[in-house]
Length: 399
Image (tube, rainbow, N blue to C red; front, side, top):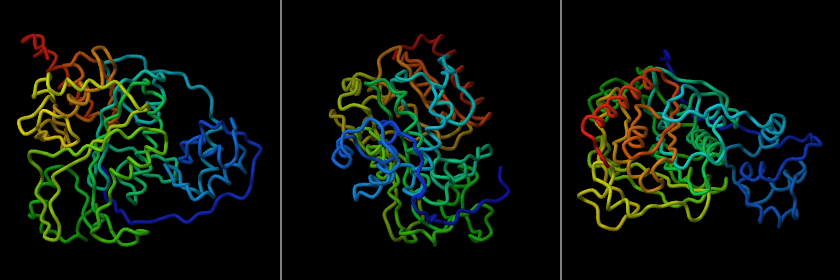
């Protein structure tokens, strides 16, 4: 674990590179980086299969440009790196029902294209936790940090979308991504080292001065967010996911039956997290009847829910008693998997944590692949999966 860590909002200043190369960039490589579709590009520069750097700069100058996961000033630099390493990478991950250790993006790149029917995951929350095991890396936007400890919400949003970019071609044409993310506030606060510490503080028991904490974040210095303002992280990830070519099918509110207390007097308390349902085509595989036929224990209709499946889900929270403070309840991945897969399909969780997605997939007759950087979480996940499989064999459970 880091001895100390501070997040101080900092927005880089930059301009588009003035030098040009003779590189020609495939249209499909450029579109998600620019956040534009081929029809708009055709209006600006005509029908093209490959783009020159002058063409790309012309597109960057359009009012319609809005960054996805690479800032405007770094687009050419990023594309030059991509064209240099645009070689077919050997697919090395071909064993299912296994958890692999490592950074999510390189592992995602080792999956076969069009092989994953469903992704269910919850990424680290922005600027909320310091984990015992972490991975510092350089991202496409140039920031060097571990995922979840970016200097600004924009950095976290970019890195989330960069991960989604790498996932996109791994999905089957009818596949779905269910992306759980929580919003945050731009506040001066301490960063917690474990879930118990977070709960203790949210209950108003932490009497330490802010400056006395080893891990803390500042709020002053952001380019536009004011102190105490909601960041709107889930909605901004969804908008950028659309720009890189996803269909945003739903932004689902997960209304928890129990939530952490917040000692706030100037706003309502948060009681929801969000699940983004993303697909690569307008009509994905969607087993809507599973909502009514699946057991409530595995994500079927809950006592407070109507017969109509809506974008407001009443699902319980997990106790986090297995060593992971931000653990899924089984019902969340269970519902997502049942809605968007058939038996035998492959489910991926690139931030698998304590393994709840894998457990839900196994109980529903699906295969799973998981990634995580932490040996301890992989051990916990494998132990939980083994225990559930053993209990399943004894009781002959059928979901």
